[in-house]
Length: 70
Image 1 (cartoon, one colour):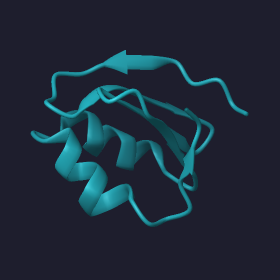
Image 2 (spheres, helix red, strand yellow):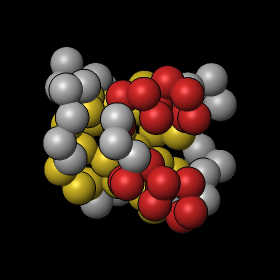
Image 3 (cartoon, helix red, strand yellow):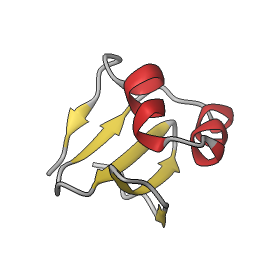
């Protein structure tokens, strides 16, 4: 498993996000965490700047081979 440095974000659904070696990691306020593979730095930058982190996850990340890690 890749260790990803996380950045706290302001969101009603997402606690923190991070990017390392093509993987976006998302920790949710409900305690779950997922890694999304095959992502680019540009996609992560979009995520970091998205007005709604939860909506970004649902529209851009989910369904592309994610793995729940907690």
